[in-house]
Image (cartoon, rainbow, N blue to C red; front, side, top):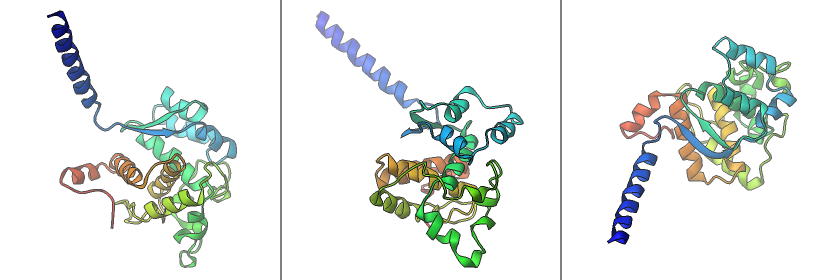
Length: 226
């Protein structure tokens, strides 16, 4: 009889745990991606100027402890993006996508002569939080090194991840959202994400950067594709 009661109690406890896990806060996206010391690396390289970055957020109430950890600590594990920190992460990933050395920036649409040079886009001219000019850091730093296979995966996925602000793919990162998405895709590929996982995570991040996409998803849209 006692054993039977124990079995029932364990079953009830298991159900409670499952329900609790299913009630995780909506809008919070936790990715199994190791941010590590990328914030520190980007400040050391100058693609993020510490003073400029902090001044920007000081005007908005200042960086909280979690945000500061992403900038100043080498002990960052799972990357968490929430509605509250999505703007800060947009800027962090923007700096990563712009500064990380990658053939997409050097040989892709950003370098098409008809656009007059890579410096003429919002994703480059608009990045004013670097030391010196943004183009001093354009594809200049090896924050993330990709194998040929990983680079191929990034290029494939980047060509199919679009954003609603300008309808261009991440392969043509001419705005801040596109450049940030490129940085995120590079992170995913370097840490073993499969193609399907990359599409899924990219879509979830887009729903935070573009809340209107969440409404489209609820109606059956995907947020990715032409």
